[in-house]
Image (tube, rainbow, N blue to C red; front, side):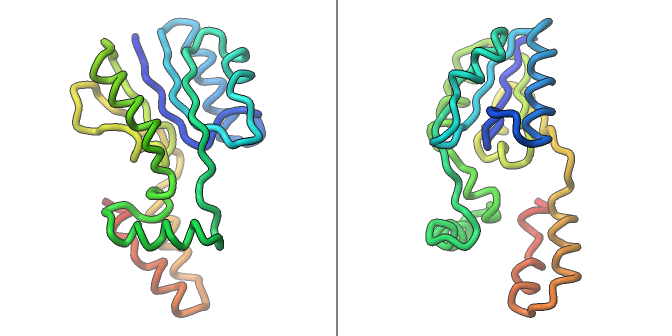
Length: 169
């Protein structure tokens, strides 16, 4: 198979469970299939090291630092998300150069499958193209947000957390 794997939030260094999971799946898949990875990296991360560690994978990485909770850029992302169908925690993971590369590869390469690794990757993948897209996630995000709203003691924050329509969609 020819697989396009899209993962935001980076993979290297192997410092979290999600990175470890994705890294090892990609390593195993690349032993039998042609795998292209589109990912992001923070300014202090080394995408070339990732490419060396995954020699059977074509790695394309874009620098991206998502807006951090409590920052001015997060407030801006929150405001912009209200004008978008995406909730803020998806809107802030939009990476236009990554999406453009995904669109380019999906339109010009013969691919069998596209994997959006975790929900945050979904805004960077065209869902209406000729290649099937699989969302690979281990959380049901809207259920998590709904549970948080049920236990949140602050009224204003609870009201914001109850807006789960976008997550469910």
